[in-house]
Amino acid sequence: MLKPLITAVMLLATTPAFAADTPLTAAHYAQQLGVGMDVDWARTDRGIREFDPLIVRDFYNVGIRHVRIRVADPMTEARLIHLRKLVEACEEYGVIPVISYQADSFKADPDAKNEAQLVAWWSTVATFFGTDHPMLGFDVIYEPADKLNHDLPALNRAYEKVVKTLHDIDPQRMIFIAPRMRAAPEDLTSLKLPARSQSYLLAEWHIFPWGPLKNNGKYPWTSGTAAEKAAIRGRINLALHWQQKTGHASWVGGWAVGESMKSMPTESQMAFANFMACELSRAKIPYAINADTQFYDGEEGAWRPAPEPLLKVMITPECEKPDVKPGHHEARSSAHGAQSATPAVASTTESKEPPASSASQG
Image: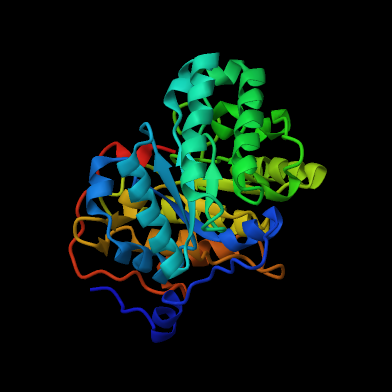
C-alpha cells in the first residue's frame, strides 16, 4: 500500500487555477505548465474508453500540472465532444490541457493536399473551442519526422498557415511548433517563426522521448559519466540559447527513462531521471513525462505501484545545491531517491502491465 495524499494537496486539487480575465503571454504560460505528462486519453480506443474525469484529479494530486493530449485520427463530432470533456475536466482540477496532433499523412508526404488537411484539422478544432478555455494549448505537430526531415520549407510554410488560421479564430490561443528531426533541439534554429505571434507562440522540442539510446551510442546513459551529463546539458543549452536569441519560450513535450516498466526502476533509471529533471528544472524549461500508460492504470483508476519511485523523481527531483561537492548527490540520490518529499502516488491496486505500443509514442 502506498502512502495517502496529504489533506492540503487534496484541497488544492479542487481549486481551478485558470483566470480567463487576464491575458497570458507565452512566457507566463510556460511558467504555468510546470511538470506534465503525455496522455492517450484521445488517441487510443482504450484511452478513450477508460478516461474518467477523476483521473485528472489523480494527476494533479501527484504534481502533474499539464497534460499533452495526443490525437491521431481525423477529427469527428464525437471526438470533438470527447476533447471538450477532457478539457473541462482539466479546468475543473487545475491541470493545463495541450492538444497535440500526430499528423501522420503530412509527415509522410508534405504535399499541398496533406498541408490543406493539416490546416483544416486545426481549423475544425479551433472553431469548436473558439475563444473559450484560455489555458488550452495547441501543439501543431508532435515529432515532425519522415519526409519533413528533408523538406524544411514545407514544414515552416505549414506552420505559418496553421498559426495564422488559429490566431484568426482566437488571437490569444497558445500554440506550439516543433522543429524537424523529431523535434530535436539542434534544429530549433531552423524554425521560421510566424510573424505577429510573439506573445502566443512557443516551441516544443524533445530530448530522450523514449529514454537513452543505447544502440547507436549517440545520446547514451550508462553510469552518468561526466561526458554523458555534458552532452545532455549541451542539448538543453541549445534550447536556452535559442530562447535568449528569439525571445520565445519552449517546452519539452516528452521524455522518458525507457520503455519497460515491468519491474521496479533500476538504479541507473533513477539516476538518469533525477539528473534530467534537475537539469530541466534548473533551466526553467517545463516538460512532460512520456507517458501515462507507463505510470497509471486507467482500467483500475490508480497509479501503478512499481514505477512510483521513478515518477516521484521525475516530478520532484532531489537536486544538488551549489555548495554540494560533485558526486555527493548521485550517491545519496540513488540510495534515497524514493524518499523525496513529493506527495505519494495514491493506489490501492496491484500493477498491470501497460500496452506495449501506446506508451512509446512521443
